[in-house]
Amino acid sequence: MRRFLDSNPMGTVGRRVGTGAPIGISRATLLVLVLLIPALGGRAQDAPSEYQVKAAYLFNFLKFVEWPENTFVDPLAPMVIGVVGDDPFGSALPQVVIGKTVQGRDVVIRIYRAGEDLRGAHILFIASSERKKLPAIFSSLRGSGVLTVGDMEGFLDSGGMIQFVAENNRVRFAINVDAARRAKLKMSSKLLSLAKTVEGKGGESAN
Image: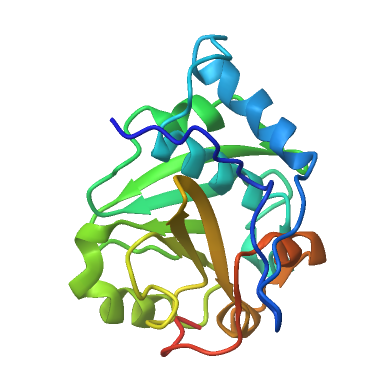
């Protein structure tokens, strides 16, 4: 299994808004290590796998995005991380998420199949197996407040909101700001500052 020896979710990333200059190491790197070390059985020397890193990112995205008030059916409704298609995370996502809360809400995972109603997710990771179905998935999400995340090439150009990218054996991410704005999602300035690139355009958005 591929290991990411120097990956740092919500930590060091390059920022390109004009200059492309990288930014320094963030304290958020330590937060991700706190999340990942228990998942690795406390073995700090074990480098996290690619999808352990991505799982930690997904969880942390919940803390830096504000959803519309009508997104939650009631004050106790959980925050839902959904995965549609062939789940690449295995046990990595449950290890990071189970037992955690964000803003007083439990965090749950739901695995979806093509054709199911995906609008119940707050973050939806669209697996690479669904590449040919992206137009239909985005169409089904139009008007919702679902934050779409993927790691397939061209995901942002197709209308996705956050795309994981691999660079120098690190997992980083890029953001399509316009797509998120159309979904009425408010991303914190900290999240935007950590994005490798901030996209201002792209393909047809789900929203």
